[in-house]
Length: 241
Ligand SMILES: Nc1ncnc2c1ncn2[C@@H]1O[C@H](COP(=O)(O)OP(=O)(O)OP(=O)(O)O)[C@@H](O)[C@H]1O
Ligand SMILES: [Mg+2]
Image 1 (cartoon, rainbow, N blue to C red):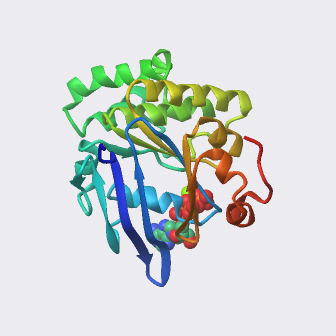
Image 2: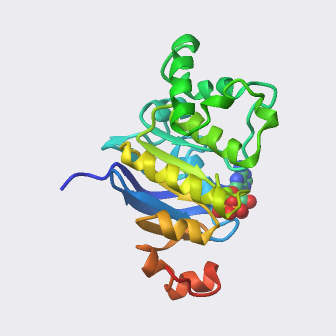
């Protein structure tokens, strides 16, 4: 059997007296689209930040393609193929869309060569026409695509998306879902944090549930939608899948 692309073992993160992540263990296989859900403050963003090296774990191990990347610096982890988008995105409002995206490419190359690949990434997410627009002037759906393009520009194997659909309406969300499916066809593996259950349930092969920093469930959408502990902790009611 192939080893998982992303493997997380016993990951914990403590902020002072707050145990934000407790002994989190899971694995993601190549080509999967996995959802990560849970109540506000459950530790989803902290998990992403710890995986990509923005937080140093208090305990545990992160391996990418069999290589231990625990505790490495963020740009090194990105260069190894693990990248996340940021919740509450802070694009550089005074810079162009292209400049915002090519920042991601600087993990691998200098500005001149990053520029061409940044254009390819904008093309991939369907917004090459707004490359020269100021990032401060974008609509929510455009910003979501710029965020994805910026992450793609680091050439990830595993892409972690933190609430990129937060401000979108149903039709706009469907377009991003379709983009995520296309990215999987390109060979990407994707982990999605999102509070929109319709989006999560429709696009994910598997869903992990975090509650108070602990993984309380892991399974296909139909299983998670009816999981008593998940319904109680987060969903509030059973969902149709
Ligand atoms: N840098 C930090 N320092 C101290 N506490 C933090 C820090 N980042 C997050 N926390 C705390 O860790 C817990 C988990 O926060 P986190 O942002 O990971 O939750 P989340 O699941 O992403 O929530 P949401 O759905 O609201 O985005 C919260 O109690 C939060 O206040
Ligand atoms: Mg969050």
